[in-house]
Length: 117
Image 1: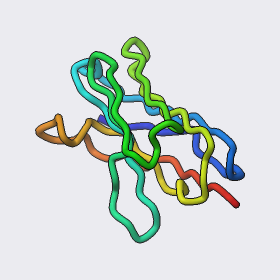
Image 2 (image 1 turned 90 degrees about the horizontal axis):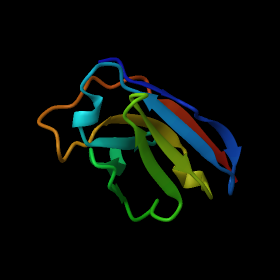
Image 3 (image 1 turned 60 degrees about the horizontal axis):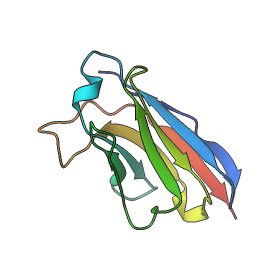
């Protein structure tokens, strides 16, 4: 599976972005999905996940600002990010929810989000 995340860019603090990630293949709807991010010099961190019934879960530091969703017909997951902060700057990736999956898909290139102060 070749994951295709997009929608990143350079924004100012307080602005919004919506990321998208297309997951080709027929098994998309089976899996709980997650959005991850990796800041320079840090590990990849799960920040939001959504199960196959659409129930979301968030890391505390994005709760109330980010919204994860999925469209099974389009094989796409989204991450709506509001009230962005400079510390949200990172490369963002999608994949299966690491806590629900026996293995993950190969990581795509991710999409870079840069938030200026």
